[in-house]
Length: 618
Image (cartoon, rainbow, N blue to C red):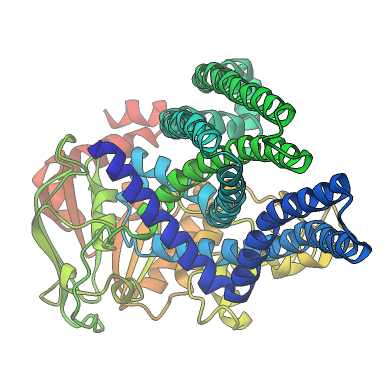
């Protein structure tokens, strides 16, 4: 009972929120739709009584022309209302749905923007909920409103005809009403079970979607065909679909058995009511109009209850989906943002990692263990270490995508946790190792680095020149306005698509575009380069690092690269091993120390020598 009450309260809360959303999106459409729904629901009851009245007068031969005319006019008006209201309601429903969908989607993604870090987006359970919330945000709020009004309309119709039966025979009305009770509770239970089933199969559906995307992805097409792996992933996709189908099949069978039993119960009630009406009529207890109204009322109550229960089931399912939407919309930020934050001022002295410990979840091992070092203003510091040493994790912490579990990161002595993350990030330019390739134009791809400067084509071009990608972009079919994708055509090609308009860049060219995106933020206090040349050939890499050396002059920089020769000229090197700082110093100092850095550099340098040179060296 407690669970039932809790579910009812949750549903009522969801319904209230959906109605409030609809009210904000289009109050006049909501009021009009509600009024039309209630009016249309009353029409069958009014028409039933008018028909009974006219039929009884005709049978008794007691009706005048005016009486029958009045009844006829009433029936005609009821027919007009019944014929016009569905079309008007359909228009209002569609328009309200568009308005609610727009508002709901906006609120969902505004809520997602509050997640200033990455933790939520790396949580599979939350991703499932977010996926359901996206599905729900587009259509569920308006469907909940439609369902609620549909339920209200069905209640008006059912209550009207039950009231009619009460007038004719209270016991019969009670029998019909009691016969509807099992249907309500059974369908309510089925609705909850189906909602739970949808939540259970959500991970399988997400994996199925992943395999679908993989099998149709341009990025994966080469490897899948070379390795002959398409069939493997197709089977995995189908396996996930079979899991979801199995759950749906079991639910459908349960619904079939339950609803078949309810239909037999309804048929028994209707048959008994018909027999009673016929015998009562032969004994003179009911008039012809009464029989007509009684038969119509029993049928209308059963149909109304069936429709009511169906609407309740669908609405409950939609409310359950809406709960996922509300859970995301009402979520607190994943990182605490203080009400009164310190202003992120231009860097004047240093950035300090002070005894920083961090792990992604309590179940994960420590990614960083007591890391401490400083980056002086205007200094270039290189982070060195094997894969998994914690270098990229430090970049995420410095950009405040996560907060340390222990210790602190300080910007001129101010803990980053005391700063507004958005203000902090405006002072940082980054090229991430896993940079994005946006399906936008070349200019837009670069302009995303600084939207305030994006309208200044000269600055966009200057950033591209600094990244060594200007010549390539300038010679594209539409220059910087060329789409860097073949996924779709731009607005200019919507009516006359040009298949040559979209261009696909190479990996190295994309890396230069990502670098230009970071270099557009040339007035920022800190530049972070996480493997900025990993996709380039040796000549291009040398050119890029020569350019970056000039660009870094006087700028505070954090450099990460597995190619140690590219960062050997950094002012200081910080060597990480298993999440700890094991060495610090210049290239010359660390080589002289003969520690981890010297070992890594020597092995890497030896790899660039030919076998003959290696033999001479030994």
